[in-house]
Length: 85
Image 1: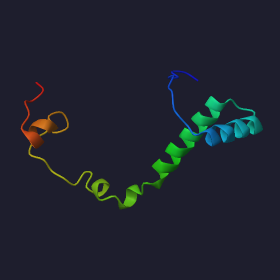
Image 2 (image 1 turned 120 degrees about the horizontal axis):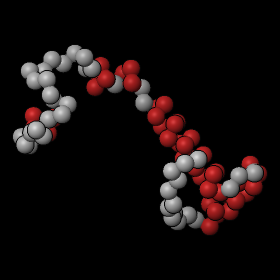
Image 3 (image 1 turned 180 degrees about the vertical axis):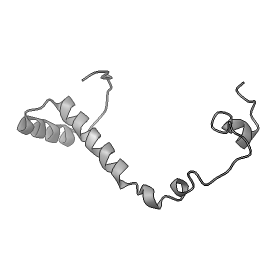
């Protein structure tokens, strides 16, 4: 594992007990168990998005713009901000 970031969280006493029990059962550290649980949550949430029925996804390639730099200067075209050039 690379690029690990130290963080501090507060959890309930019962949650900590359950983490210790589960980590011991799986022969993992509590940190590894938490990382795996976070990864599982994020993967599950990303699979929940139905991109086929997303209305914005359906517009990809169908909108014709009068400019060719909208991805770079989108703030200018949407909000009137100064262009990046």
